[in-house]
Image (cartoon, rainbow, N blue to C red; front, side, top):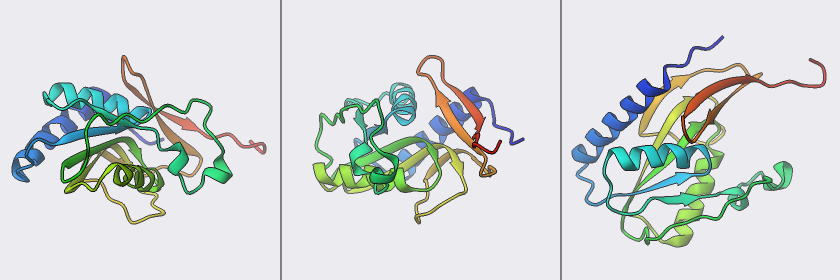
Length: 172
């Protein structure tokens, strides 16, 4: 079974690395956007710990997925909320689990519908090395490899908890 680091350690690591990254890259007044649901919870934590002044933005990328017709509508679609324009801004995009890259591609499409950012920095709590698209996070809490029969889920928002689940099929 794959071992996950403690959620507290992962959050501390991501917070510290993001703080350093913002300074090193000289990102002036960055805005943070979390992807519903787990990415929004993680972004809320980071937003508070890094004392961002701009309100936190959230995205529900359900309608932007390229696999929408095969997956269907998620029963809990939430509205996206960006109270700022991303135009010429440094955007920090936050997701809980980076796997295929399709969620991030959809999030980028939605952000660009609001305006063209100067930069986008991708933060992921967990990076599962299982890409279908060439997308890579700038800040990662932990990289792992999972068997195809397992998935990771961030539970929350309070407290946050990371769980590995076995996917059951009719033949199991």
